Length: 630
Image 1 (tube, rainbow, N blue to C red):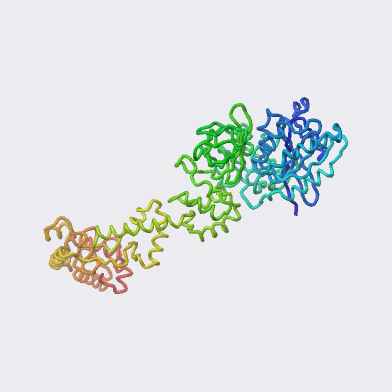
Image 2: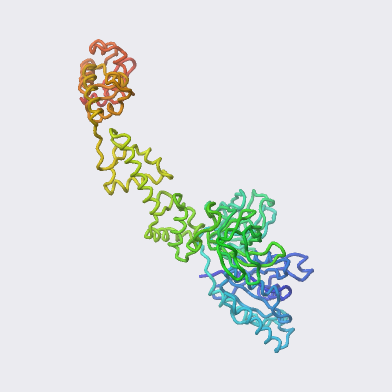
């Protein structure tokens, strides 16, 4: 299986980085005339190197001059293996030290030290240079291979350097193809027949010809016309490859270095991120609203720092929120570099703990939990942080840094810790417990206010929750536990039974008498209320309907159930005998005027007992089956 790594050069200006790369690869990474004229690398250069044993490398040649450190950071971000170049004629220099610090801050795990220009140094001096370099890198978090002597003039050390790079590559983190595609842009140009072309190092996932991609920040969308890897046309590009994408239909002016090409809608830009920030020992303390230059990928953005607690002292680490002057595309676990606003120098670095932090509080809280190496506990922390909103499933991969292929596994592990899945959202079990308590309280309150109703309408019960979509899960859980009964889109506590009070019983007695006397004409709610001597009797009337003592036709006309059944039977018997009946015929046999008859006929139509056919009625499905009363 072929493995691919990104090797980034580092070191002081004019220590021979570009000559070393050309000797190893045959590629001159100085692309610009000014670079060749001045003899220094100004911008990023790239070359391909076969290391053998199934390992290929993309070499990023970065500038060493202090004026171009921002270009160095752009190239070093995303590096798997560092190639530290120290000229034997000068030894360790200021940019050597700063570049090593940057590599540490970016979390590079493996590295190789090349002592170049050995043809210009005496053996005794070489020993001193090696001793100095060894001492300098001892405190580095990068695991360095022993220094290799190299000369671009004589070719000394080429094979040893290849072998060292191969060994270091074995220790580098393997980039996943089964993840969301992301490629920071380091170069944009127009090419005849291809349109706008963007280049960069693929950080994660794959991209293929025909894929639809977005360029963030911004609103650029395009379909990839073609893909090139190290200048060769390929059907797709895998992680760690130097990639060029032709994006027809886009404008060169709309894309700049610092943009990011993505394929999934999951990615989005942010103007604030929570980070764990580490300051170098020689830097000034970070105080509230310290202005810094934030480097992530190929982007350089001005930002204000809000420490979580007090100032962050030199040589220490603390949680902070970065408020950015321009949007950034970030992911959990990304590493950034911080440089001072003025004078420009590297002051520290950070690990992103939340690319989309909540607006309130305005400073990070419990960031350590969101940086937990245990992925399930980390996911739980993000879900709990979301409170009632929880965490959308679509946000898991970017927000928590979990590879998209591993998301289902991690979600399942988090469920054992109390995380619940509600639709397309993850919610803490404690939130649903609270929703359960809110629902039970609401149902109980509703029973108290409406003692004659069978229960609380489910839609009303949904509305009492801050996120109504949780309601079905809560209602189902309460029903499974036997605490609540769900009947005809209503909820009631299991022990609750609608009952008439003594006063309501008196009303019901009076209303029964009124309805019996009204017979097939029925009585409206106002008529019932007037007969009882109160303003409103609808609750009692509806209770009687549910008990089967009364029936309602239309919005507010009530009938004695027996009387309405007899009227219904009389109408259906006539239709059965004659095949159909007009309102005039039914008026004659029932003795009812149209005022009372038509509402009953319309109710029978709606119930399926009759079917209106022009100006007459014939038997409906229910009437034909002989069902002749309610």
